[in-house]
Length: 141
Image 1 (tube, rainbow, N blue to C red):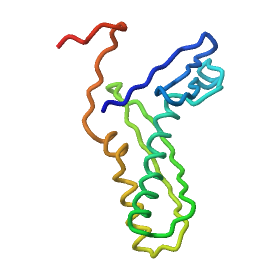
Image 2 (tube, rainbow, N blue to C red):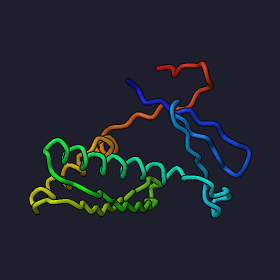
Image 3 (cartoon, helix red, strand yellow):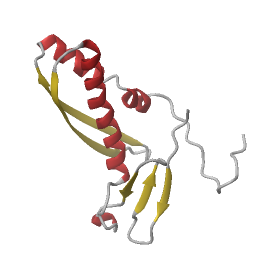
């Protein structure tokens, strides 16, 4: 099943209401980009998706194996640099803390699984992003 997002741009700054049909959040740009800083930036949302998947994966694997895990926290930082050919090089650093009654081997396994979460693998995989078309039209091959 395909993931679908609808977005409604508001006339204030760059605010948008982002919805998946069940939940809504506010997106915006920071003040430095002439936004109103009233919501997550597109970069924040991208990094949040990765962070959310990593911590959920740790919790999923721990539950599956019957390991006692309390808090699972992550800090992610993304830096983007423009290459001379104008392409972008993105580096994401990840720090995670997993509280629980775990051995060093169990903790290492959970961190390894976090690095294999679905969103991490998706981002590193092959992407095809089609050009935008007006509502109701389809992309021609």
